[in-house]
Image (cartoon, rainbow, N blue to C red; front, side):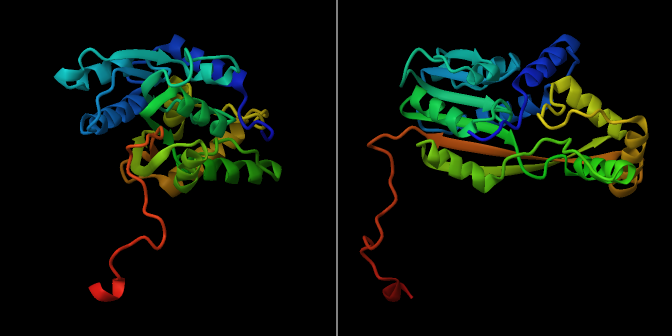
Length: 278
């Protein structure tokens, strides 16, 4: 694995602080993603007996439980902390021990994401399903741009302050690399609005989602932050005085291989010539 991007200890502290704050509605993004994945699961023609949810938010269990059809009311649901994926020990009883894993915003701060996905695939029974939601490339780009402009103007250079997010094409490749079959990725684009840049940062802090990168050690001075707010209001402010923040949610779906799954046709195996159709 390359040099780590995220400070695991700092990421844990961020989440613990957010849990201590316990702000109402702080987990609305992960809960929204959980609702979306539960809706998608409801139209899946497959019976699941055991589900593992990877999330910091205990409400995820209740959301899934409330969306289950009557014939799945007995599903066993376990909650796993994303921090558990950072350990090298066994976090599942063994290989092929669960048939459904769902992660609403639980995988995006893992340094070895390919390795984590491979572990999840091994934990799934054949024809088991992984569903995950991660912030995608372009999320909070407005805050990133203004921080870079403000810090560069003040000190002649800028540290990376907003975490890097996954590209949707890269996400599909990681699923394939981890051994998932029938990988599917798609993106939901949202525009969030806040009364100020500080209100945005305050909400990210309440989620435990402020930056935990290894490289961002220098604190932001008051003068740099003042320039950031001025830049944000000028470039991304609306007529009512509120500011915009983009969030692109990347949804991942992949299945543990099974002999009965659909498989792409081999090149040259088609029975009808394109010429005869045209």
